[in-house]
Length: 190
Image (cartoon, rainbow, N blue to C red; front, side):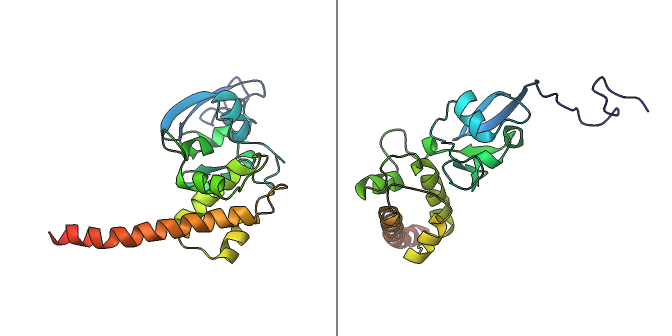
């Protein structure tokens, strides 16, 4: 059987050497970006060091603390548990993408209003999990929010202000949906 220069059989996917870097392309917060990564480079490190998305923080590097949480194809994920090469061709959203061009998003504004951050190290990951959760569970109870937050470690806030901020946003969005529903029905009847 013939072999490639790297020792793999012909037709087999190429094997990367430890010192090789590979170009990957992904969609970061709605914009296509590409960069070079080593085969064993974590997505968290690639986002921070290669693409400059420094809002993604690295805490434990074991998927426990939640500081590195991003959304991968719309689903919250720990970027320290994913290799950068696995993100090739995928959509990655980081905390930098939560806000409109100017100002803060409603979730970020609620965190500010409720003093839901202190040192701020864990905040980006918590915001990403909360944004994901509110899309899936638009009107959560306090117990549900606390359960969702159990996947994050924060030594400063005691979580109570974070819970208050999330419930505030959920209530505000529910009010907007109730206001918008009759308007949408009127538009459909016209």
